Length: 598
Image (cartoon, rainbow, N blue to C red; front, side):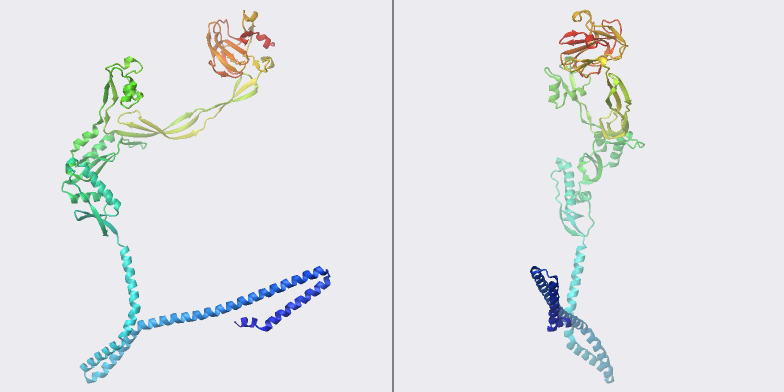
């Protein structure tokens, strides 16, 4: 605080002013020595003025800020002293007001004891009387102190009572008390449990039949505290027990969620259901599941006495038929399609029901004949679900690679193919005693071993003497590269004596397509035997005859060098050879003109 006052003194401002004057004089002397000319002097004077006024303004801001902080600090200290004084005084007064009755009481007790001791000289009765009078006087004098203490104690006590009350109320377990005919029959936790119990009661009432339609029950509920709650089935039992004496404990048989029968012999009913599935179970097979084709459950509960039936009747129903067989007598004008359509089934389904009839002939669909539309369906069937695993081979692919070093028509295996293996997990469903699955579903397929692709090299090399160049730029190749010799060439004008060249080769030698094209003929001829004709699309056709067997069919597209047949001696032939003809616009051409080096 003393520093704040000192900064405002004239001596402080004087010292600052002198410092700036010295700095300014030094700057002037420096400018004179540098002698940069008039421009430098002006710039130096400008910079000096900016620096002087900038620092002067900053110092004034700092001094002003410090003065304001000092002022606020003194005000805060003053406020704190006053506030702490008020709080301390209030606490001190409160403590004094709360302890004053007890302090006065202790002091009064001492005074009463001393006063009684003094008055005993006049007698004990006198002393007691004086003590009571002294006590009454103290009570009248200091009773206002007790009221002032109560003004502090009572609010604290009220707050404590309020907190205890809220805590206790929140700890209560609120439930719903269900009433029937004005009497509470039980308690449930939520409205959903109450609604479910009421629906269960309604289902049991509806199952009772027309004779019970007039019997109704309308339960209601109200909020209650801290009672043991029931679930929906227990509450349904409690409602019925309190509503009528025409109900009793029994076992209900539910099929697909619908109550179908009620009996008092629940244990025997369960034994019968177990005996129906027992012959199909195999404890040693964890992959086998045995159940019924419908969801079946027995539930012990409260049911109307009028709905009870003998357990033998229920057992008979379980082993009976749900739907009998349906038959139809064929009428005049009926067809398999009209009969199937009238019953809403397909012809395939009708054929499956009548496997001994041939619907494609009139004899298999005679007028007056009887058709089976549907077989009798048992009410309850045992359903076996079997999960099994087996391995399945995965065929390999074949990849062809063109090899220009191998002769045309040569096929060489580069890599042998190998089948892969897949592990199949399937689920089969059987009904009754049938060993034929009604449903088969693949539920998983895992590839255990990937197949290996078979790679073959296809020869593309053709010697020069085996290539014939045509005028349109295309080529023909010699059809039997592995030949042994030539029996004869084409003879006579237009090939009237012999229409082509006979190429000798061993039986089964491959015959190649001389050029790419489409197979127009692939069959047998009395003279040619097994033969093939290919149209190359440029006016040229080639023919290959006397083959032992063919490798193509009519209409198939082939590529140059593709195997189309195998050498043989079919038709009018005296030995294994390939009769080869070249035709241009239908006219036979001399093969020797195309392959002069043969």
